Amino acid sequence: MRIAFVTSEYITEQNFDGGLANYLYRIVVSLKERGHQPVVFVASREDGSFEHAGAHVIRVRVNLKPLWFVYRSPWHKFSQPCKWLCESWSLRQALRREHIKKSFDIVQYASYRAPGFFRQQDIPTIVRISSLQSLWRQFNKQQSDAVSRFENFLELSAFRKADSLYGPSHVIASKVQSLVGKNVSVIESPVVSIGLQVGQSPIPGSLQAKRYLLFFGSINVLKGMLTIAETLVPLLSRYPDLIFVFAGKIDNFQGDAFDDYLRNAAGRHQEQLLFLGRLPHQELMPVVRNATGVVLPSRIDNLPNTCIEAMACGKVVIGTRGASFEQLIVDGENGFLVDIDSSGQLLSAMEKLLNMDEKSRATMGSRAAATIQRLTPELICEQLEEFYRNCLRSCQ
Image 1: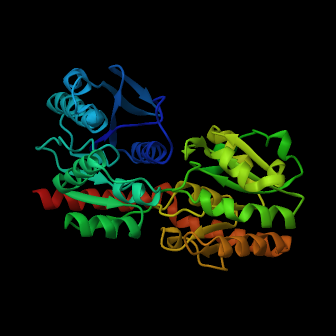
Image 2: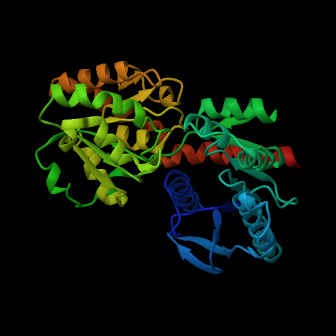
């Protein structure tokens, strides 16, 4: 099949920010290896066309000229969702030009920033749901306003216009299904080839021979930082040899960077916190592999890559119930589950993890790695191919 992937971000671009771009890259490479012809259309600051990892990538310069009126009007606060519309239209035009040259069998739009709002009508269309803006704002404690409601409208409209929808988690699939009245299939995300990504990168010297718990991902309210903050003093005071490591983009909270908030929460134990910032994947994976355990107390999530990658490395993960982790984690068998926003349960789970002997922790980690075997790119692509075929049949 000749498959178009239309997205606001991809790993070839400077603005890519994690899960969506990495997911698309894994799928595109796997489909190419299976004999398909994937072509990626990505919003960019410039036009361009090149080969990347065996797949064709088309950069599409977004025409922002229509926004000049918005920027100079009382409606300037709507500039961000209006930019989404410009992106969607520019991507549609680029897709249309390529489709005329050589037709596509199917197009898969990302959900983020609603690039499928102006869908190409004569190609069967799928949207893969990587997030749901209304839920993300709610659980990130952001107030709803006219701008966010307009963004929600654009996102849900793109879902409704698609011929088929799928996402990685039952939690988000169920929510979207209730909002748009369309069936949403669940196809889990593939695991990256961990062994190939680690390479020879060493862990930072500050972590050599140290015992540490690790959080990696965006450091914000959505990912459970307020819950972690409440555990720091009792945890670090009971385990003075322990370091709590944070790797990822640091967001702001109440006007300050979140690392400052966490340091203040740790009080006199703040020297037991280590912030590594965003790391390239080949540098991050050794940090994951050497962690005593991985702590991911998200308030909402969508079967996150962080959990998949940590479990694939044989790490014991502490996740949250009702946020999609239960698709992978069976509490007490291959990891731990705690209630969302429960600092008491999170502290208890971390202490259980820290007090396990090496053999028991290794056994639980082995079960975690075994769970991820169902997420190999080959198996996930087989499911995705069948999903594509079903979509094509329904559009005939």
